[in-house]
Length: 243
Image 1 (cartoon, rainbow, N blue to C red):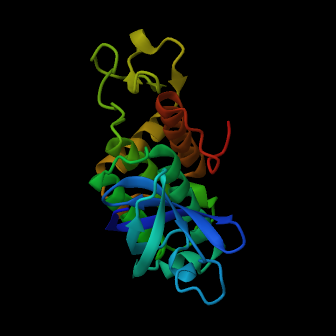
Image 2 (cartoon, rainbow, N blue to C red):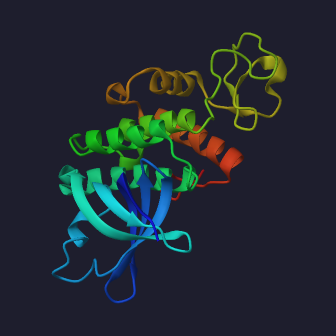
């Protein structure tokens, strides 16, 4: 069976049998894939510490007969050790990893999604904890917002997504993919000008410049992103609050 090499981010690791782990990986070459690391949980294994969630590695993968590859070798590229320094960073990183794992399709590589995920984890590894739920960190919300762009669901926020007219209302439709004018609003969500302004800022600024926002505004942004993912991908993020 053929082997190939690729850089990858470990999204999730699940115990399998006594000593093995099943991994969900975001690879640069193949997109999201699954792989088994045999013996990774043995005390003397050289793989175990290199295959933790949030770590970026260079892998040698063996293509099996099914959908699960075998890991033949792993070399650290970036351990993102700061993610393990406190619970805030770890929980914020977990929100990023869950989003990538559930929103990105299998076997569809995306340079933009891969580089965005590595950037978000690197920034979170150095960020200062905030007095709010980690899932509402501006880096997490910025990542989720920009990931919508990477997977083709850029929200339209500069005009009415239905008729193209000017928007003075605060209506947003996840199904249509953007803001609506008063005439087209119907029963669309009313989200408030601060929420739409924050969403515009997250879309337009570099990820490192994602600005902190009031918790109510952050929750509104989280809700909008969640509605788009649910409407178009059927994905409900466990790390996001239900409303």
